[in-house]
Image (cartoon, rainbow, N blue to C red; front, side):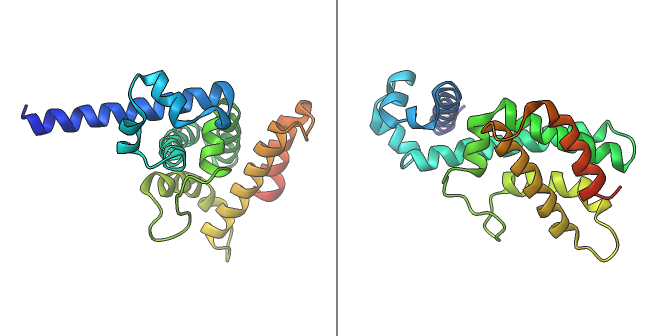
Length: 192
């Protein structure tokens, strides 16, 4: 291995450590607790080393969001691939989405609530975000219905899932009806 390759590998390792530490700190204490000073202390590097990887917290949030989008895409595809038939696939998709949001609140916030400097629904949208949307579209596109644009339908169902995830987490919806909400969404919105 050349010196250049070793330096690139070490740099990539440091970057992964920064992102993992930020994610861990955010999941434990919330995003307000994630500062470059605290991250530097936790990973035992100086703040200038952090700034050599990320210009600030916004870029760190973006890196966590991209990592989370990749994980979400994998989770959605795994859930839907095991389901037989459109109704079961959409139900599995909804459950997997809501489960991901519940299990990873700080990552979910980085993806959809916080400013990570990422472009959505544009040409320059990063691939992990496009792939997460594609995982939704693969399942929902097949049930959009005649004359309905699959992407628009997917955006609408995604918005409903995001609303359920956000309102549930905020304690605005009674938890005992969580499963019934998924059923209603699948039965009424997806019209299966």
